[in-house]
Image (cartoon, rainbow, N blue to C red):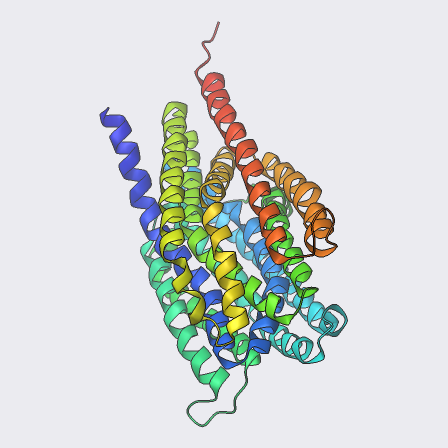
Length: 451
């Protein structure tokens, strides 16, 4: 009983600062949406669509770099400082590659926006926003490296402080640049992109400064011969990045489906997605905590503790999802007027908030189950599940029903959200079952008696 209580305590202790960190990060997109929406609904639509372009790229980079977290955690569990130093050095090399990749890809999409968006005004704002965001990619890649270094070690204070800085500074810069305060010109949606870029490099500088003491302790390991090749680590993180990216790209596809239904529908859809993402950050934090703790116990060859941690994380996710569903149903309709002055947009947002409440439980379970699998270094199973659920089930059916109007009286954004809810339920069932099987399998293999 004491062991079970200790596992609960360790997981909650790790998850709480991660919750704060994830909510701060997700709030950046929400703040962009609020400020752009108050400026003009066209800027809201443009920033929303452009965010759906660069966010999958950022998520891909995040997923590839995330392969460092279980490795840092396992190495720290064994007190293997030399391996931690090697991982950090290899991570720096990969950050350079991913910085160039991210910058070029975002710039490419910036030039393509007039061909992807039919509304000329919206396309131009999106293009300018992406040109600015591209310059944030190098800072973002290195910020991930130092964040995951601290996460893998269980040192959350530097990341929490940096997350708070991101939130406060980005909010202030958005207000000033979008609305033209302090004598500056009104930049609208472009101001959101410039604010994000400036904030990213300020946050990177702070995170590196706060990590200095920990980095100095690794000097002894810097001269060790590296047994980890950068390309191997990139390839190992690729399934994580692809799984996360395919999930976000599915939301991007749904956003562009919404764009076929009108600019105001785009605006409402983007607000709903951003609200869902902020609420979703708590399960993401629990998932990250589960990844770190499960991999930590795997490194210590304690499969029973790894199993208990996984089951505890799933229980926490289920409780959170149930509570949030009730809260959103009770109070969610009060949020819509904060995002727009347009009555039609407000009505659309209110109607979509109901769907956010409907999928909270299953969304939390599927995310935490995926985190458990990553802690066990099972990277392919979440990728295959996401690929099948989103791209074989949700996307095609959402298009033919929500956009083309098959089997319904007329196309409607609500039909797209119904399919999203059903798809997330299916994903939760598959990933939940896989995580439970793998936790038991790892325990059996490790504890099997020798002959």
